[in-house]
Image 1 (tube, one colour):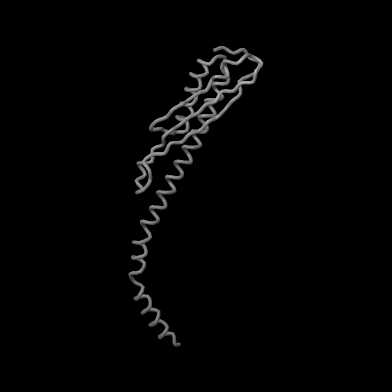
Image 2 (cartoon, one colour):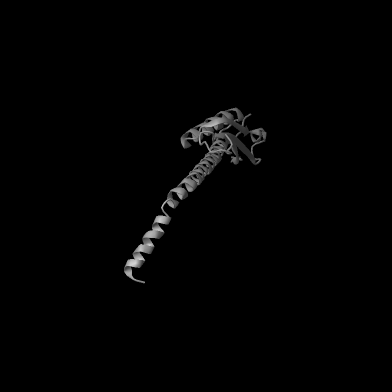
Length: 153
């Protein structure tokens, strides 16, 4: 094939493909945007789940360091709020439940404090059709109370 014929053939083939790139872009752009929004949603849920787990750990640890159940409740609530705020997580609704029944046991008996935190993360601002508006994440953590330290109710 001569160079001139090759150029003519290549030129005809390129003219035939002229609108295909625009069509591919028009079809693939919404798909790629949808995948990007889905990745953002999964990232936010994963980040919020880690923050809720961290807040449960902080609340249980703060409660286990106290000497009585009422102070343990207050310190655990405060620690959970600080932890969630420090992670930058805002919950639509949240609940912090602290099981301080271990403080009723006698000194010398092994006891635990359990913190359970539920946080409803907002997903409605992502704007992906079919994505729920929110997701409730729950985490629980148990921390031991010092066995030989005095306990009050």
